[in-house]
Image 1 (spheres, rainbow, N blue to C red):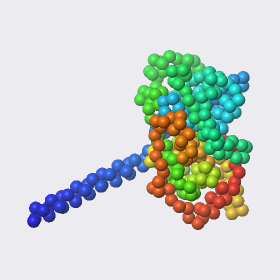
Image 2: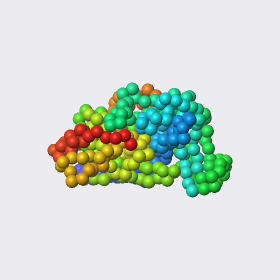
Image 3: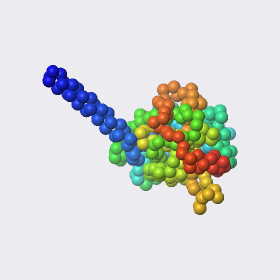
Image 4: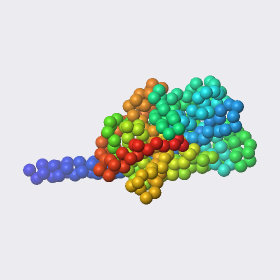
Length: 320
């Protein structure tokens, strides 16, 4: 009998150890996308309309070896009505730079895909998501010395960079995100911390959200929260959760004005992935990784949040 009791105690102890290990792993996973180094799937991108000196700067996330996703308004002006060039900066430092570049003109313009319900107006925006197909074999990789303002070869570039593994992940597209698909038909608050990487001329800065609630509004097909550093030029950047999912794409910003507020509140609008958008992406990229958000990702709004979201849903905002 004593032997049976001892075996039972040992069995319970083993279960406790296994549960403790699982809990520990879960906690450690909540530090995904916690630093700039985690964002090797996010790129600074530039578009140039042929015949124009204007360059549109945005950002994009690589979803597969041959695919980027960005904000639709980034590609509308330079590429919608004619030929355009594309550049994605792979890795930039003080004395080295590597870029994907193309000058395929109208041929490249035909490789940009907007969702059929995309709506981009001066004060209204919906489904601000575009897919960009590119083939690294057709797209030239250019190596530069920004400080010396000259081109260099790949061998010299590789001698200059501090971390080859980061470059290889960037050029090969091996560090790819998992998309989080919102399926709820009701407005909710996301139970996740968010982070965005801001890239300017290769310099990266990590932006993290405050304690303000992160609303998902099916009515607007947008995720909205208090702006935590988004400025013009960061559109198209991927918004990542602290558990490692791609929540959406930076779309726009606005100021919330209300008689209830002592001063305007800056907001950021994020284009999310719902079922329709996910179906659109899967038509083009069947192998993309995704999961559907369940109740562990969000909660119901409280009374104050319902009032706040009601005000936000009436705001018209300018595209950024």
